[in-house]
Image (cartoon, rainbow over all chains, first blue to last red; front, side):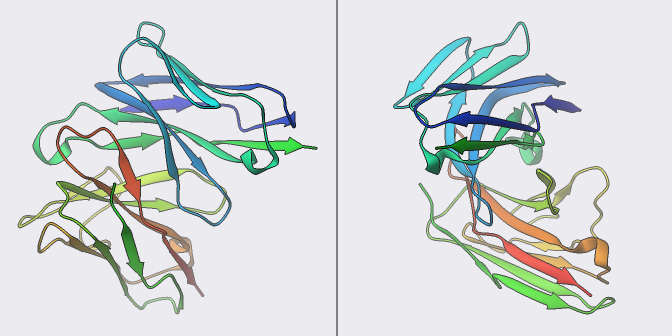
Length: 114
Length: 115
């Protein structure tokens, strides 16, 4: 099974940097995803890590440590529009009909203050 | 990427009835999934919709309650049967475009309220 843990909520101010952590335990690992979800909307893809290290994409970066079962999402130069829920998800290493299943953490609600 | 549409976008249903949710993708995709997101919660995988065969259900979800169809590579339906207020949730269709692709996309969701 999967056990994915992330903080429930965080707050930060505009222009600041925030790091959202995620730890996971899984029976079969095939990648870690971060999604952003604004209230009432579908999740949108932010980043994907499958190897150790940092992936940078504009203001957002994501880091993965396979040994530690740990990831973080780093958001720089925060803007008000970044207020959203950030979901950490782990892809299952299945086969056939179970290939590619994605399991989500509870999400971290980020509030950015002016 | 893939553009996913769902029908209906929202519905209010009486307990004991059933609702079928449709998911349409603008291109052929290898994998389709159905998720549920209960109020204030994260996403829970219900099942993987398999083309031409029975869906693969996650623990806690059964075919009698959530029958799923996937007649082709662009379309799937999820039925919520014999509904109760506990089924009130957002139901999301999700797709993976190719076996080697990393990204997974989500539809806009269907907001279901059972009274």
